[in-house]
Image 1: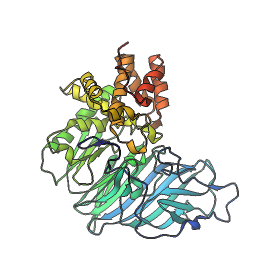
Image 2: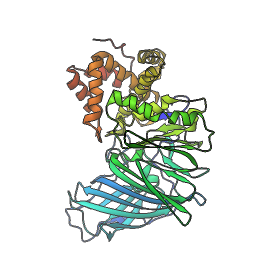
Image 3: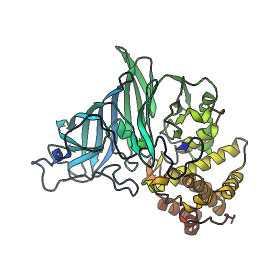
Image 4: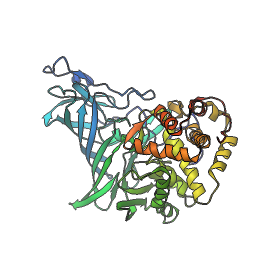
Length: 483
């Protein structure tokens, strides 16, 4: 993610980041209905209502691992009404009498598990599903959920508002650290990645853009269904949909489809020119980080007052029009495309390690700027190091706290950490480190401890002191010096 305008300061509301409190539209049965079925054996227990993330303990759910989502929704902007059916294919990791899915503010009309009707109840933003029989650990199961309502964004006092938003010509759904639960039931934490199929039905004449490869569209009786498939595992917050009037560009690059869309609310110009450089930037980054990790390219530009950021939604980042009001801006494109390696292909296992996403993406901006004829990476580092505020050094990017998840330290000090590593181990070892990390962890997850161990193994050097100072210290570290 990259923010528009002034850098985020602690306590500033971040439009687009998601919170914990849902806006319910229609009451549903109380959670007491989720009592396990009398037929369930005593060996079966309910799955946890959260994965226990240090910053967001209630995000995600325990007891199962999702392999695939099939999300079919129909949305009418005129009435702001969404109807949907989502199929969740998963494997039980514990013997479950019940399990939870994250779903905010929509009314569930029915649930089946392996084709058999199951009981369901709401507990805030949790959908509690009780199958007629227990789910045995190690076995696969399929849940189908039918739901409807007027989707609403989620709000968090510290992080702002995000999720599904009604716009002047349609809708857009995206946000970080969560968003998917505002428009489909999901295990909403990046630790549980899955593949996705989307079928999005909208009034004829509107475009519906989502993640992955476009797999066709059909029109019938005044409605068009747009189909998308993301075959690489994806963290749920990286899913997106943008519905509205767009200038669409289709192409092919290296055998992969390129699909980009710019809102027609903007005159042709800077935004179009910037997004047109997507494959050029991706090819440069491929030379730095290794093979591009996904099956498609693209980008989406939206113009909505509630979206003042860019987000690395997988294979097709979304950009606020604000980034292009002063002219072309390939730097933000480089930032979001770098996330395709760092954050998307190699995802967080816990939110406290977000510097691994933002530090590398910001560093990629510095690399691209140098490549594109601007200041050198060393000049970018020096400018940040000298000009950094005292609060930046007091906030450790490796442990920023939930309120500072998108703060300046995570981005700028995170990037300075990357450069400190490069300066310390030298270019040859550094680029082997980053390429190896992207290759070894492709389609998976990683932690800071994993990265430090990897960097030490590749470089043959003890690096604890360097990472402790740059990621966890509360004072300005000494300038890194070459070996």
